[in-house]
Length: 437
Ligand code: GKR
Ligand code: MG
Image (cartoon, rainbow, N blue to C red; front, side, top):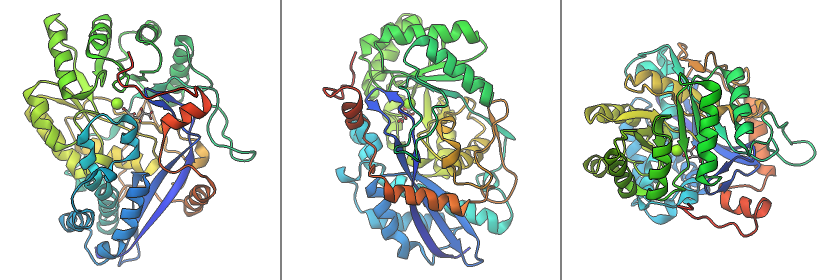
């Protein structure tokens, strides 16, 4: 399908004051929506993390993408690559700048800029040819995709600002183990999740160990648990936590920085007889990281993310590589809208080796901010039904998209900065320190 237009729209959605190892979420988070229009008048959609750099690149790419065919994804990748030229530090995504741990992520501009165009092209092809995106990725291997409850320590507040744009605080403040258990209960009641991930790196490790134990006590051994402190711990601290939680965790996500750190931790845990998988979305973030990670046995589960691995097809390839080396594959998430949730569902359906429940921030998205028709996507038993309609299988709500864009124009938040907002609202002396403990 020949592309006749590419429309790039920045949208803003409210975000609750969720804590992580570098700080706190701002009251708003931005996303980029890419719409490709085909010569048949249909549109396809993709979604990306917002950064001013990615936004400007996507806008500048419009004339190069117009005239290309949605079926020739290699041609689209080529024009994105030519536009970006060689990778340099200014291409670093601010989301990653927050975590600022590895020079590897500096090369992710091509993958991040291409991804929303690829998703939109697949969506448009699917709509034009009458097939769902999962079929274009090789075919659906499951009808429903299970996701995991994603818990956060958080301050009071539901996000948004001002007199008319504050969201209700659906989950309430959660800075203690009891409050996290209550958050889990509420999220599981609403979505039916059957596994739990706790975002850690906020309290000293013993407090977070106690939180995981409280979750285990309440939900029992049939609910897999994970903790992800986003590199807040040294190798030694990670070894301590890993030993304490050896029989409790399904996998141990990014406790410590870098491939070398994860490799040292793996070795130390194995020496203690603990064969718990280490997972990452921080030290193995592109294909070029895989050889070193395999050689050093650094990670046993890779959390793929089509937004920065280079699109949906790249993560299908990642699945094949992971299974070749006996590594598990799971899915990473950042704050996102329904376009990305649908893309993730089609992708997970087409990757049979994705046997772990995927991450999603979707429960944190407020109903008022969704931009697809019919409102927020429904979960049943923690799962999203893989759409069988053509393309990604939703209709865009043009009014909601416009409201999201008007909110972007009104709000001053641009590139995400959890560190600065932490200083402004919680601790004026806050410094990013990874590892902190
Ligand atoms: O939203 O605060 C957050 C998360 O910490 C996010 O930024 C991470 O990218 O969820 C992500 C993760 O699994 O590391
Ligand atoms: Mg993670």
